[in-house]
Image (cartoon, rainbow, N blue to C red; front, side, top):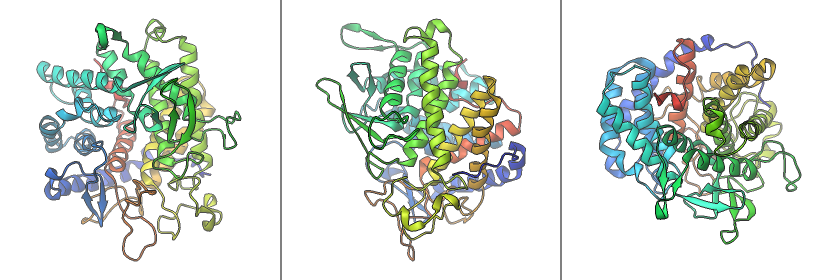
Length: 460
């Protein structure tokens, strides 16, 4: 269980955040200089150098988005220009990519962040440039929404596995539908049928809340408050749920912690977003009270599970049911050990999950639930403090990653096991590095008294 530091404040991390951004700049420069971009998107490091791994193209936006976040945090124009140039040159195929469920990763990280900076007046206003970013987000949201599987209660955006497959990850990418909707766009299907993208996004969120998150309500023998399943499998002939499954976790009956973290962050963000909408807009889906209730229940449950099933320093092992965890003894009562001999930790889950904890805490504080809010807010800061220090902060100038000990696909054995180690460790991932930067920026802007950072700050 995380040993929550109830005294730490964002300002206490100011020096560590400054060091983080200095190291981050050097890492971005190294990738820009050394990584052969014609090989495809960088995915994770091997012996400290970024390499690719063909599965789907879901990490390129994190690479260029990292430059944009670096500018946001430091004001260094070099990073802004690199982020803009690479977005223009290489991101267009991601807007129209019909084969992935990751539009909210690639395109909000690039086009969305650039539009946000313009709306926040951190970069000069240019009408044509603004229209360009908005058009990209509109189309991306509609393309993502077209990956649709209907079920009796609504439907979901299916994963690259096919129409039977609901991934918990997608709850953080569904924000692209919300942006597209708020920018005035609709998806048009056969016979010019218009699809309300807000409604479709909320239907996906409800399916995820119902089938990817557990609430201790005896759905199966492994039904524990807040645990998540990576994949939920449906019968595509009648739309009925069949079973939980996992692609990157150990089983469908254990919790892959990065999937858990996506749920924590995604549900908390959607709570923040719907709080800006009118009741009339939300009523296109249903009761505004019921919408808030299911989003809040899923966010709270997943955050509670993370706190209760993570070692005291806030960094989880890659799956709560990993088969060799028992060999580590009382691992939840000690700091995570990335160099142990049995099971890897996943720092990228910590970076993603910490943002979910902070956003849920902030949301509850705004709703007047101060005592409850403090638990999640302080837990998020506790995790960030850990990630801003070694052994998770990468200080080696020859290592291209900023966040060490990230895991991609443990079951497939894709992660590098360094010489002299028995498990994968000491490597970085593009999503882990991006979300570490996003987490650092979230708190940096609070320290600097900048506007509160949300994905929907890009809306005028």
